[in-house]
Image 1 (tube, rainbow, N blue to C red):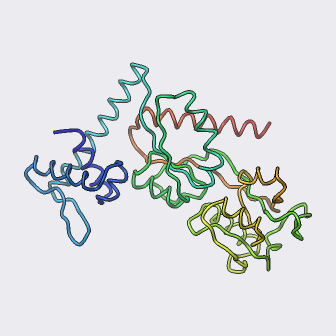
Image 2: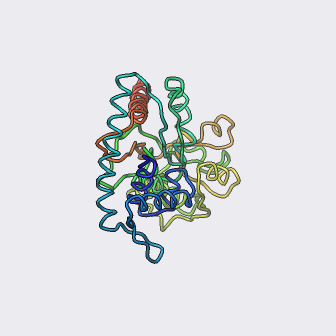
Image 3: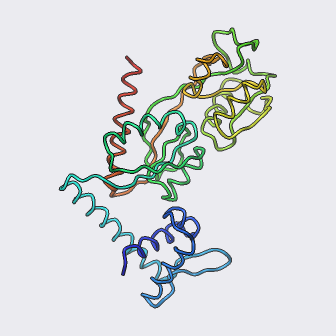
Length: 304
C-alpha cells in the first residue's frame, strides 16, 4: 500500500472534504478521489459515506484513520530523527500570513531565512487573520502569522513582536498639524476601513469602543480588503483611516500622507499560531526557531 494513498485518506478524513483536501495537498479533486477509491479497493470496503454533498467516515474508515494518524506521526518522528543524525534539513513549509504581515513584515524575514536554509522551500498563503486561523485549524498550512486575538484553545499562540497603529490623512487635512489624535476626533469624518475578519479592523474596533467612539458612530465611507487599498483611498481624499505604522513608510517619505500617533497609543501583537502536534517536520522546526530568533532580535533593536 503506497504512502501517498494513506496520506490522501488521512487528509480527507481530517477535513471531511475532498475539495479542501485537494487544496491542502496541491492535487486536483479527481486525483484525490482516485487515491481514495484505490484505498477502498485495497481494503475491499467503503471508508466514507457520501450523502447530500457531505462525507463521513464509516466504522472501518474511523479505524483506518486512527491507525493512519499514528503511522503518519511515527513517520514524521522517524524523518526528523534521521535528518538530525545526518544534518540534512530540507523540505517544504507552508506559511499563512495576514495581508499586512505578508506585504510589509515577512519579506525581510523570509529573505534572511532563505540565505541560511536554501534547501527549505516556503509556500505562502495570504488571507485576512480569520482566514489564516481557519487554515491552521484545517491543517491547510503549517504555521500562521496573524495580528488578531486567537480564541481557539487548541492552537499554540506565541507573540512574536508588537506593531503600532497610527492615524493617517492627507497633508492638507485639518487634523494633519495635530501632535496626536484621540478616538473622539474621528466623529463626523469620512473613514476608510478594512473588511470584516481583518485583524487590523478587530483591534481598531476594540480600541475605539474603549475610548468613546464605537464603530456604529463612525462615518464609514469605504470598506476595502488590504492596506494598499486603504492608503490609496485616503490619498484620493475618500477619508481618513487607522493603519499599521509599518505600512506607510513609503508614503511618509513621499509626503503623500501624514501619520499621527493615537492617544492613548494603540499597539497589537503579531503572533505565530500553529497546531498542537506531538511531532513536526524538521523544516518547520527550523523555520519556527528562526522566526522566534528574528523576533527577539527585532524587539532588542527596538528597545535600543
